[in-house]
Amino acid sequence: MTKIVVLQAFFGRNPVLRAELLAKYPDVTFKEDDTILEGQELIDFVRGYDKVIMSIDKLTREVIEALPDLKVVSKFGVGMDSVDVKAMADHGIELGWKGGVNKRTVSEMALCYMLSLVRQYPTANLDMRRGVWKRRPGRTLSDRTIGILGCGFIGQDLARLLRAMGCTVLAHDIRDHPDFYDETGVLPVSLDEFLERSELISVHLPNTTLTRGILSAERLAQMQPGSILVNTARGGLIDEDALLKALQSGHIASAAIDAFLAEPTDKQELIDHPNFFSTPHMGGLSAEALMAMGRQAIAGLDDHRLPSPDWPPDVWED
Image 1 (cartoon, rainbow, N blue to C red):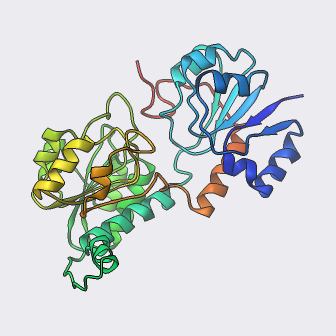
Image 2: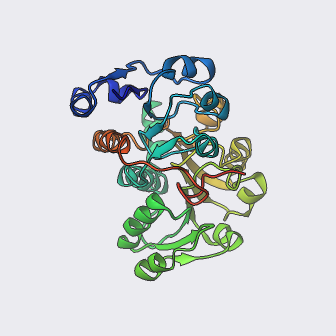
């Protein structure tokens, strides 16, 4: 009998997902606490199981080599930066994964961030909490030039929302998406042009060797004076110390971040800046998205294949 272990806590605590999984696989162990496993703890928990449903636990090459019985990893969620997919392929472990499962949930958050920052709602709320009644005139988001850095599932979904509002949308991506650009009127541009023309930038990239630190101090300095930066993707893409300096100088007017290099983050000075708004990596966590990711993880136990340089896209690191 196939033995399954579920490491994702929401899944383990959800009676509907539990019942749907147990109807297909009766031999399942559920982890119900919120700890993220790595190293020997992960090895000890998964040892002896054939298939695992996991979210952001650290599946490194060393862990994979210590789990000879493991045949399938099914992802709860879409991010792959905690998984060594090349090591999986080297050891014949197949992956159940589908991109875009939570795209609308994340794109809605990014849009919410943009609207809030251009209208200065977080700052106005901070004023109110301090007993200050100050009416702050913001700007409309419509008719702004918005840059989308990374035009995958989420970036494309957000671009459609912004185009419907009348925004000019620029895109920069290592992959070409000609059909999407033709359909939506989104304008693909070089990174230099992207940084210089965008009034507001929204980041939608995976965290890989190609993208890590892409918004360095030098590139933040290339952004328009008074521009806005939003990141609902992954930590490690933005130089957080340089971002703080850009906020302090006013070069960047405001920023909103949902993902940090280290989580929980220790960048308290950044968190406390009055023009910085943050959330604890919850962009993909709507009730609807969680159920969709859970059901996709169940499907991935049967619908899986060996990772390759082309799949999942943009996560294979040499």
